[in-house]
Amino acid sequence: MLFSSFLFLFWFLPAALLLYFALPSLVRRISGGRVRARALFFLRNAILLFLSLLFYGWGEPLYVFLMIATVVADYLFGLWVSASSRPKAVLCLSIVFNLGLLFYFKYAAFFFGIFGIDIPVPRMPIGISFYTFQALSYVADVYFGRVRAERSVVAFGAYVSLFPQLIAGPIVRYSDVASELGDRRHSVSHAAAGARCFIAGLCKKVLLANPAGALFHTFAARGVGALSLSGAWLALLSFSLQIYFDFSGYSDMAVGLGRVFGFRFPENFRYPYTAVSFTDFWRRWHITLSSFFKEYVYFPLGGSRHGTLRTILNLFAVWLLTGLWHGAGWNFVLWGLYYFLLLVLEKFVLSRVPVSTPGACRRALTLFGILFGWLLFAFDGSESYLTLPRLGAFLAAMLGKNGAFLDNDLFDLVRHLPFLLIAVLGCTPLPRKAFAHIYKKRGTFGVVLPILGLLLSLCYLADSSFNPFLYFRF
Image 1 (cartoon, rainbow, N blue to C red):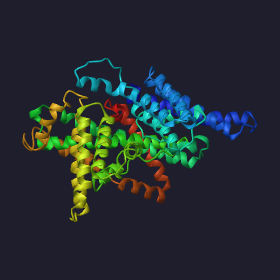
Image 2: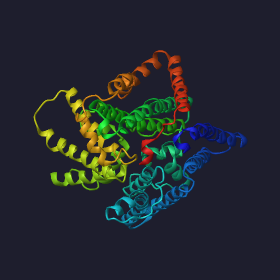
Image 3: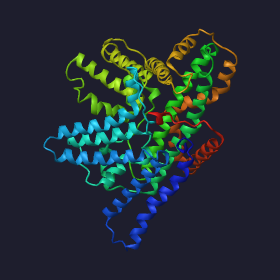
Image 4: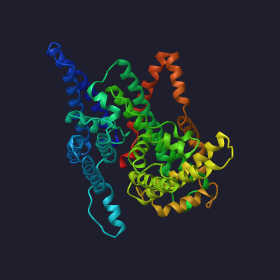
């Protein structure tokens, strides 16, 4: 698919930017400046909606109609909720509609399979987990009075389908961009900052996530008895680096592109591997998803306001849904419940133990728990060697069942050590601070560096066939 190769993106983007900025300027010039600013923004939103549907339709020609149906339905639900004398019933209809589509395409085969029923289900539309949550959160926010119902179907359609973050997040709530849908500012400085953010995300994805993913699959594909302790840990570290740089890289690309088009998308990652606790990790990892479940599941269920038992049950519901959101598979259920147990233990047991632990120790223990969680996450059945039955053998290898080194494990570790050190360093705030310092002190070099990163990424893309986006599957 062209989505996975970036080829479509790199001819689409220049054309999209040209159309978005040139057409409104041309209209204003032809009219002699008599076109109102509101009309120009309507035109820009219409262009964004057209570009977004074109972008999605190129990869999903049939499912673009499903997106249009979602846009129209939730636009009408929003108007209906704001005008109805029974808004709760309308909100329930919206929930049934949106989650019904999501269940059919993403979960029906899994749940019916539990009862031994085999049903034909079409391939899951790309990004349905993201744009469904965005549309549903809008209707919920209208119901709770947090935002006014959008009167323009074009503006609402542009919000739901915004192509920079359409297929893999971050999850943007309507309140995040409501004002910018009607009045946003464009400037060279904002566009330049957005371009730098986009290139940083591209470098994360292409230069760090892809090599880490290739390394993980090289080790994970080995036979059960051909994986040593060092090889298993190297594979797990590689997967942890891949999933972070893959998803945070895409998020940076989305935030950067959004800024070029005048939008300020919310931050989605804040150096999660530097967390000092599991609670802290989830304040830093996929921030928009954590915020969604907190606002629309945890708080409506009562949060922590009704005693310990009720709080634990609410956390159980949130983490079961978080696991299932990532995929219809038992490994994702186990992964969600794993974090439920860790967070309950941290909240109700460890927080009450009067023991002072140094920050470095807490970071190390947290990171160890995160790595084990990724072990559950990785065995999702996407490859024959990544099935749950193989998980036990992989865990045994991590504990040293097959010895410390086998074959060329030591050679592989030494050979990839420079890349791993660079990638681990990239998980910290140090590179960002260094670039900010360089850009402030030496502005010219701060411009040249992103250009070099872009050229290096393009060269790598031209020479590489391994280029998956992990979160496209979710």
